Length: 202
Image (cartoon, rainbow, N blue to C red; front, side, top):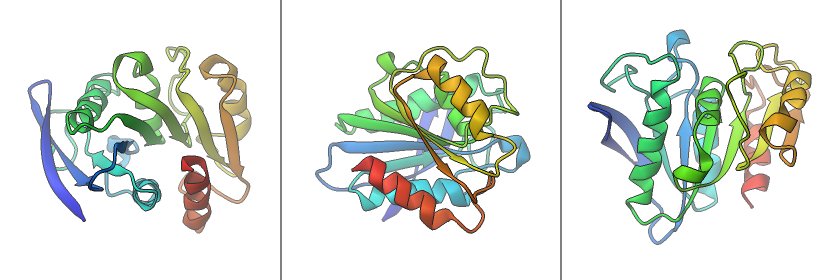
């Protein structure tokens, strides 16, 4: 069962949806696509990611970045949003969840890539359709906890070949999984995306 919650990031109260698996020490924070283009925590791809983790016994937290929906504040160009991510991770960690995966879709994956894995309790990071043709990744340094990237073969916002060229700078050991028929929105292939995620979570 998902429960509406709030938590603080800087001076702002953010809204989220928390699904608790009693006794589980595993958790996932899931971030959403670009808020200036309608992205929020109710996005269908975000919901697919959340459901895959919940199916595997993870407590999940998805939330709206600052300035989105009921979350206070204003859009922070993806930089201030990194602090929102850290606050969400801390919220799960405060629940004595020891193993946390950070998963993001599109803009959310770009924000996540700027978060320091070593400093905020993240075990691993999963990026779904990182928007390498749309957002500036030049400031993204090594991200050793990023171990899986999923992309659509027909995605012109996150083209697989551009992602492949970026992986050595992020984590050369990360896997790239491509769904050939998928566009950036995974239209008609949410089931295949969920399948890949469940396999990776195992």
